[in-house]
Amino acid sequence: MAVQAPEQSSDAAAPVALGPAAALSCRECGARNPLGPVFACAECFGPLEVAYDLPGGDPEGLRKRIESGPDNIWRYAPLLPVPADVAGRPNLNPGFTRLVRADNLARELGVTGELHVKDDSGNPTHSFKDRVVAIAVEAARAFGFTTLSCSSTGNLAGAVGAAAARAGLRSCVFIPHDLEQGKVVMAAVYGGDLVGIEGTYDDVNRFCSELIGDPLGEGWGFVNVNLRPYYAEGSKTLAYEICEQLGWRLPDQIVVPIASGSQLTKIDKGLKELISLGLVEDRPYRIFGAQAEGCSPVSRAFKDGHDVVRPVKPDTIAKSLAIGNPADGPYVLDVARRTGGAVEDVTDEQVVDAITLLARTEGVFAETAGGVTVGVTRKLLQDGVLDPSLTTVVLNTGDGLKTLDAVAGSARPSATIRPSLDAFRDAGLA
Ligand SMILES: *Cc1c(COP(=O)(O)O)cnc(C)c1O
Image 1 (cartoon, helix red, strand yellow):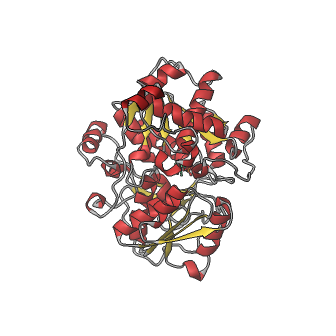
Image 2 (image 1 turned 90 degrees about the vertical axis):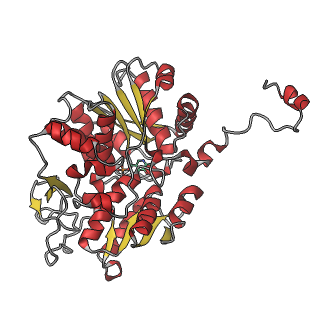
Image 3 (image 1 turned 120 degrees about the vertical axis):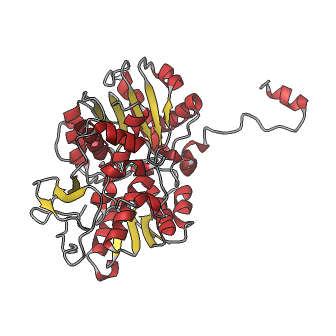
């Protein structure tokens, strides 16, 4: 992401009360910057993240408060950068998606421990992006933005369009021009403006960074650029939910897809918070990152033992993960190495195989990103990197209905026949 001086700081605006959020701390130099629509540190231009004064000291009370909250991400409002009354405001209220105990898949993969699929296809616009956008919308409101925008690999555009419609904001979102039809339709149907850019996601992202610095983009809240520190916090709710759904227990291993890498790093942040608040027992956990071979810059750096991520030009059917220059790549490497995890990649063919494997074993139809995580899980088990005897959670972050083309070749009718018993008998399916 282009580094830009945080000149749009909210100095002039009234102080904003965003729950327990205390400051924006720099992920490079640690400097504390005031809360506001900024994404680069005033000291060193490093990326910012939300720092908190979290409600410590009474884990039992906090757990009860969470459990009595709504069945969506707002049950975790005490741990999020949002106003206290957030649950009462028009929002898509994503989250609390199902955690599927995947015994059939476990048998197929030779897993003897518990295997679970966290299925985020159940969110309002059918991907995990509703979580991050929900937080960004609240930040946009707090900072007085009236247009919501983003650069998107597809799912984010739909999530922003829907959330803006519900919140009564204007939206104008940007995507690469060659996305799957399902993603384009989902992004356009909510009535905001949708702009296809002739280029890759990285071109779209660069364009948006320029737009932010230009008078054309004034007053615009780009959820994954100038609202990124808030947006990113939405991913923590995946960690919270997984632990709560496991009975306030950490998983031993978790397999997460990587696009920009933000989700993976915030899942780690969420797990660390639960430990420090005493909501789960402090035990080791390992985080594994998953990419498609045709866009695997983080996996490459991990395997080569490098700290820097060399950008690539994406070429994969997993378009939702096709970010060739992932902003959080180096932080993903840190998390994988610190927790004893790994980053791995699979071919497009393995992605398709994994989508059909998950569908036929558990009845879960994943988009290509879910094929990436399930495929990488299988590969890491085969390579002896994942421990089959432990509790493992695999993320499915999107809905297969959005990427039908990926499996259209292999998922077809067994037969097409005349409506007669004879014809059915001849088809040999009885
Ligand atoms: C955006 C996205 C991700 C991960 O995004 P990050 O940029 O790594 O946070 C994963 N799966 C799907 C389906 C997505 O749309």
